[in-house]
Length: 321
Ligand code: SAM
Ligand code: SF4
Image (cartoon, rainbow, N blue to C red):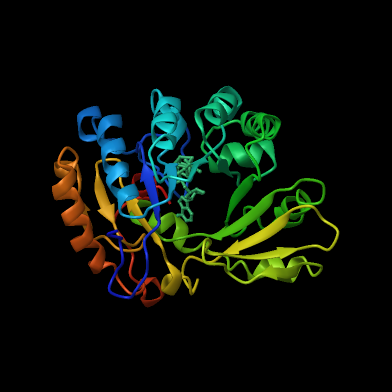
């Protein structure tokens, strides 16, 4: 069987797909203040194109799919897409990253369609602060979404918090305490300086070392496993875990098994690189796509250059995180 292996012997088994660049929220570190232009419907991959591309990836050994965005739940008929992907032979896990605002409406349908798990982004547990960082979204909608997700059994739930200096460093304890009675992975992600929000993010970076400084009771349970860029910690006796994700000095590159597909059908071999390969043009030619992928994958860079001050131009809502 042909498989996707790069020049550094890394087997690619995980594909993240941004299904739209649109979003129902406007997080300050993700969307620029002056607004932005979104892609036209025609430029975005159709469901047929996505499923064709996923089928070829699956044939070449990809097992895990994550749908992201923009906000994946604003894409019309997203539940159908989940169902279609979960029926593709070889795909053993399908997950979704969402801001959670529409989960109350969709969690049950997503579960029934075959979704395995969700990651939910939540940067504050305070209504006013949440509205501030998202430029107007409603925390209540996310909290109700989390409850519904639990209710329908889309578990374990991962909650992602981007640490922003002077904004949510005072909430670390409250966020960690969510793991006391809930089987959540609460994961702190360091702010990345990326795309059009670079200026906003530059002075607000906070190392997630602060989590360990503030929460002395945390004990390490997992040092980065193959499938996750997070180091995991736990307070003894608590049900959930705390994950720390440092995208800059993560040391994850040597195990990186993932590639990304943008909403317009470009393949990114590394989150932190602007190099992309158009796959949309091969979406209806299975054999050509297979041949191209086997060739392109060899170009996956050994490691990223973020720690050397390189800033990529694409915005996070275009890549999907
Ligand atoms: N809209 C969905 C959401 O917010 O979860 C999915 C797309 S969003 C681009 C994926 C993840 O990227 C989110 O967890 C978000 O917090 C994170 N993200 C966006 N911009 C970021 C930045 N500048 N630095 C670090 N993480 C960022
Ligand atoms: Fe939307 Fe997610 Fe970006 Fe926030 S982080 S603006 S929810 S895409």
